[in-house]
Image (cartoon, rainbow, N blue to C red; front, side):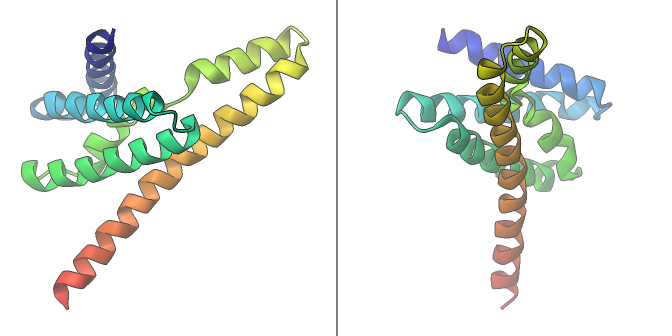
Length: 143
């Protein structure tokens, strides 16, 4: 089950990288970033971490790995981070929230929508947090 999810997250990330017209030479690395982010998210869920916190930590990890790959392969960070974050996007949760809202099951739709909103915010905060850490490290190295 875990191997299937990792392979699927790799393929999904690489496919979105193709949609975003990333350079062909970075598709495997981009898929690897998404797969690592999803693996970390699953690992946090296994130890009973809240999904929002797991999303925050996994997105921060994806951003850090994207910055490392950007330096190694001399490409912009966004090449790896945008496609690498795709497996963490709560699309299924948002779909369920909208489906319940359309069926007038607002008691089910509101908590799902709130959770999807919080997970989306966690992704954004994780990306920003990683960038802040990166700037602090660079400032510390300069002295």
